Image 1 (spheres, rainbow, N blue to C red):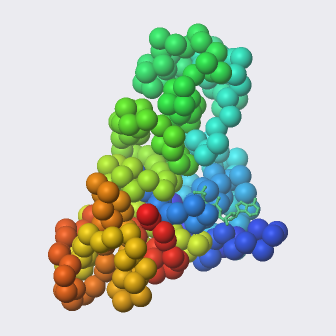
Image 2 (cartoon, rainbow, N blue to C red; image 1 turned 180 degrees about the horizontal axis):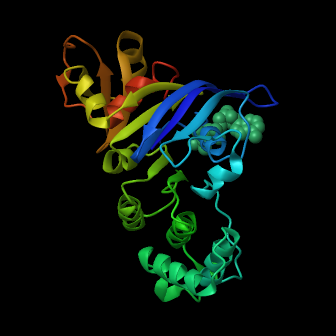
Length: 298
Ligand SMILES: Nc1ncnc2c1ncn2[C@@H]1O[C@H](COP(=O)(O)OP(=O)(O)OP(=O)(O)O)[C@@H](O)[C@H]1O
């Protein structure tokens, strides 16, 4: 199974070009879509989730019993789709159990006993079984996100889209959410859209970085990191020195560490007074997006 996105473009009525000729091939497994605020991640996710039209381009889902044109065969796509949107509203006075049951019947699971089994299984899976009879309005942010995953999993979807799921979660809830995502079956495409680099490092075997509506990098995170080997240089500087380093070096990130500012610069050759560092995915991210835009990281 594959999701093949070709030349997708979208300009909103206010003139913002949210997607510029985006092409990506996404295979089974966990795919990370990383980009800064406003990069176009949600626009891309909503288009794939059949919730918004593109101006041009194509999206095909292949490898099912019949290939689907995602942009036109919306009903067929929705039958195999699980979607957790960025802003997931819940009805505050409905219990988790009742809400999942309702969504399951909307998804066409007509048999009451079958529905009950599915709902109970999902509540167990996302660790909300004990609180299934509590109203959703009483849930914490992490519990709501886990409920969101449970509703996205109803009907055994083959394509799952989760849009910035861990923003606002504490570390324990984020871990729990990561474990849950990683348990989703191998024969499913899971697209995880996020601006948190660590989420992708922990979970994804394939990824893309988008910035200002364009794909600026794509591949296995380990390969992208390996490509930067020997090219990232580090120095601890005073905050007041950052601007002058920006004039003379390709500074990709600055970060406060124990009261000092850690500066990372990109260079094919050694930089005087800098020490070499082993790159990580955050360096890949900043190296790619600073080619397109200024990033202030302190
Ligand atoms: N309905 C809309 N009408 C007009 N402009 C929009 C609309 N939705 C998004 N945009 C603009 O399109 C660009 C891409 O937005 P999008 O929400 O897709 O990015 P994102 O990567 O998901 O960002 P974030 O991480 O902040 O959610 C932004 O400049 C945004 O302001």
